[in-house]
Image (cartoon, rainbow, N blue to C red; front, side, top):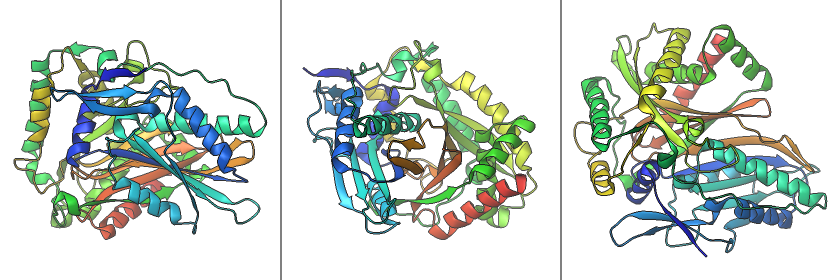
Length: 439
């Protein structure tokens, strides 16, 4: 017996971008563990994940009138896990970037893939599990819930226990759960205001370093990992100065971008329209529990002025204030959803004055502290990274941050050749330098 429901507005946006390769199409995550890993136990644990989470049994179908639906199998039919021998310590990065630049064949079953890089060398060998998800079924916090479940099942099975798993319900889309609601016409007016703000700062937007058609663009990543002491210092710094870690990371990234990309205008003031993805589980009615996976995110836009004298702490305070205000004003759902008008609007977004410019500059998605166990039976969690693809070129760089086991893992996603590897590395170096100088 199949379950079926229509895609919501956010899911339709992601699905549209996937079909046209012009925006967020997928989310990729890597979990590194060390210890004696048994492939059969991992496969059994994956099967239990599929049993618990209906979206891991979902595919996308299209009705005769062009609307898209999630279709969920009652029981999983196969597990899209591939096991390969780990070639070296950097092998996972090759798989990670390959996944970033792939698209899901929605004609096939299920909207995710996984590769286990198995290492048999050493007494405590390291292994990487790289997972690829269509963005309609996942967000950053969902990934944390998945890996937590996976390691918990693995620990139980390895100790001889048999986990009893009931399937979670297929939840409505976030649009059906969010409140308050606004009329469709009001939603369009709000979009026009944002577009007007963007148009007003068009001269301040960063141009592509080298434009290229979509099929020649490639998502790439740079990584940064703190130690436990640095993360503690950063958190304490934020508490002492009345700001948040998300705001501090956002401020550091924007200033770093300005220093690297400002060029001859870097001494002057630039306006940045930053868009920050936010988790809306607590704004849903009823609230969505952390055990549920899905795309429970929205995005809020804030405007910031930056020059070479901008203080990291001042900008961080600005982010804290503006994001709180923006969440109250910009997180909403529509009383109705006009699918045809919506897709027509999305189809026109790459037209106009922004054809060869980054619309948004830089942004940060902070997953916060993920409840992934450091120890799970014979396995020890060693590392975690997650990121998303941006073929459209709307973001200059989008950083995904998550805290696991007392460390902060930062994954910087950017698009080549729109931004060169040299520039991405320089932005990362400036970002790290700013954080170090703050604490």
